[in-house]
Length: 103
Image 1 (cartoon, rainbow, N blue to C red):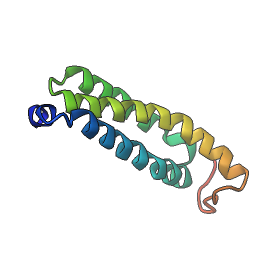
Image 2: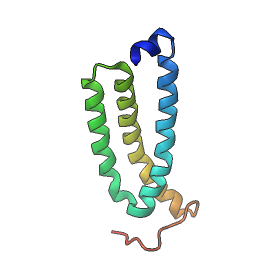
Image 3: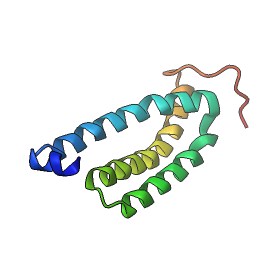
Image 4: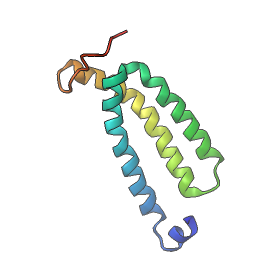
């Protein structure tokens, strides 16, 4: 697949579009995770980030390696965003989950 995309000069565009989609998917994940789990779910994203970065390092396929790297670093960025989301909830910009117990 990568050879075809490279031959047609579409590898960069494909990686860019996939990056856009991955980052876009993480936005609602941040909102939902903070709503249901609070900031205590940050470590899920730390583990996912490390796993995806290791995969990115180990894979030979350029496109898959790029997508794993983008997912890994998006996961690391999500850790920051989870804590920022908590602040946005405190400011009233997003709803607070009334059923979640704060620890």
